[in-house]
Image (cartoon, rainbow over all chains, first blue to last red; front, side, top):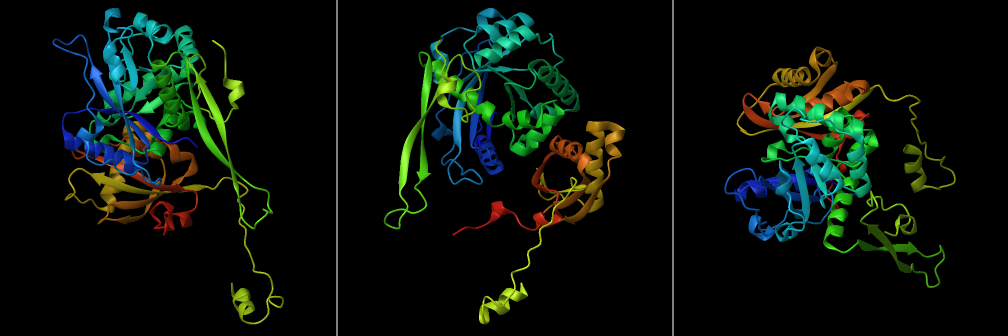
Length: 289
Length: 136
């Protein structure tokens, strides 16, 4: 089973707030979180932020509930694009981040983000009525390229008007993409705005996702986004190896069990969607570009 | 079981096999039980069971309207000290109740959060929590 992830915790300069957020996320059962740096080029005097090293934000990473290992923290950049010049392909500043997301504000930019931009996540606005309709063609293009759509829910907790917009926008998204490639994340600024993974799964049902898609929206789809982010840094794809142990036949020679370890190789390719599954045999998923 | 206890002292073959009850539900169980904990920003604030139920109904009405507010659910048990409650709800209304708990964000102008600790169709399952086991 894939582990739970929350790919959007808002960055704030306040150290105690960040450490409280990370502790709460670990306590709720999230194994991986991403700290999100917003970048809005329209605001004056804005520069692309530089991610802070994790050890400057928190002294010791908290242990995830139910698994005795510390939480994994990533950095993510979200660019609010309202003009085609705001997204700069191959900008060296983008390389410092593990994940790259954009939030398009017009239909044209949404189309470009789905079809052209080398990004991992497209944020769906949840604080305003959608300025455009989701069209099938760009959404199918994004699904083919492995780009994810993200809906964040903390605005819905803060305000009842935002709640209406969140539900309406999320429902229209799930209508057009049929529940595929949807990520649910928090965008929380305070620890009390975080919710547990199973709560979010249940909330996904409200957004029109199916049971399975809702659970994947906090687990394996997020993993697919991370793998997609890794392919961005390489030429064409990445290879994952995992050790699988097999038990010997029931009657071992010296009254002992012996283990045979073998390597199963999982290949995820830039042009293959949902590399997350991990269940399909590797051979099936390798595709020549 | 008693037969086995006796069997241990004398002979195993004399004692009958341990009786084992298997319960099979042919239909989906009618109710679901939830154990929830209310986390408040200001810990000094205490609320009574009546206030808690009123708060949850207000949340249901906010999200699902009058139809949601008409949803039948019970507060079976509530501990004021730890702000932990046991709720019972018809299985058909579980998603509505749970989602309204998730989206409840403020109580009397201070932020709060409902932490859903356990959900089960069996009340007995809420007696213990496997995540709090201390394994050595």
